[in-house]
Amino acid sequence: MSAPYLIAGNWKMHKSITDARAFLKHFLPQLKELPASVQLALCPQNAALSEMVQAWGNIGKDVSERLAFGTQNTHWAESGAFTGELAPQLAKELGATYAIIGHSERRQFFGESNETAADRAKAALAADLTPIFCVGENLSARESDNTEAVLRAQLGALFATVAETPERFVIAYEPVWAIGTGKTATAEQAESAHAFIREFCSEHWNADFCAKLQILYGGSVKPANAKELLSCPNVNGALVGGASLEPDQFAAIAAAAN
Ligand code: PGA
Image (cartoon, rainbow, N blue to C red; front, side, top):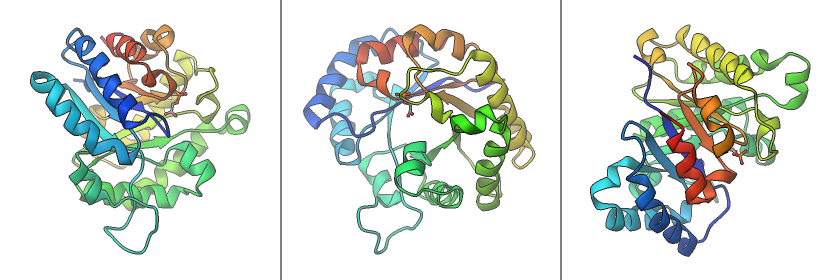
């Protein structure tokens, strides 16, 4: 049996608390129409997280368990002198279920390495969060046929650090050249990378766990391309940036996961 779909929104550094509340209000009626089997998550800026969790608890009521929340990053230490970082346990206290880890923007702009991303994933697991661990090649790696070598290095560092099969984990394949560019991997490119990731994971982690591991595709997912990408056998959901900012678009992508 394969994994249920997970559609996660990465809001990056967008939306005030007022915007976030307005999104939830608009999204609620649409959520009721979505297939019950689809899991949903939103990852706002850290400072808006507990506000959103509370607002959702109040307006969502009967459907609140259909939508979970996550952070966009958490630190590898439990606590300490790390100015500007978020401790995983505090993220949990704020109401996060998920933590996006190793997003390519963190790798590109904030010096995230394969090793620090792996350490963050380990600490997130210890705090009872589910990492959404991002991997993906840049354009030059894609063009020089090095996609699998990059994935191998990124995931290799993860397996060196999280050696035992975790209880819960999500991987997001996000080709860097497709993020925020309007370019999307073709269904064939996505399926091939996802199949490789699943296979590589099952060389290190329990095979049954890996068969059900949610591997999300990310990179310019829109309502227009969601169906095709989500119908690939190894694509178990999407990590959505730009299109997750609009409740109608986010709902339309989730509706395609069927
Ligand atoms: P995008 O972002 O959907 O805007 O390309 C995806 C991501 O960065 O997770």
